[in-house]
Image (cartoon, rainbow, N blue to C red; front, side, top):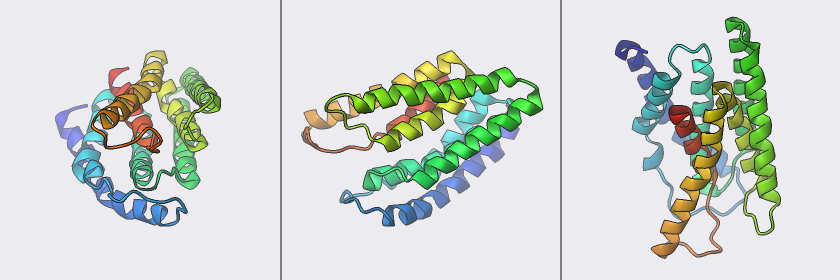
Length: 213
């Protein structure tokens, strides 16, 4: 994608970033779970949203599925903020991302006459979902089924891109999350029984999987 074409995508991302906090507050307000004392407002700024969109545009390029990736990313930004605030991944938002992913990729496969890529996307969702179900069922696991559902949704665009992107997008979230937890434990900012959100790591890892896969 040319630099000229990249500018509107980055601007769109910045606009999405402006809306994210308001939407996140609405969903967080409906949560019955206790909230952390501080919100991570800076992390999901318009600048970051613009960077997320620009990275996808550069990597996915002229692929007809680019709008689908951007739509899933937009919902993902809201999900990440809600999870950071109240340790919750609202089902309506996860469902919205899933509908956008499945419906959009189906349309992209039809338009580009590449049904095999849709099969890959569905396979990616199945692999990601099954892997995280197994992780959630392990003794002592703190993986919630909201995380499982989000992982399955993210498997759609990762599977569309192929095996390498899928594997990278499945492994990186847990590397990122594990590294963060270890750093927080070493600096004594959390305890071993402190609950920490996994959703942001799932989303960040999936984004990096797209860029690196």
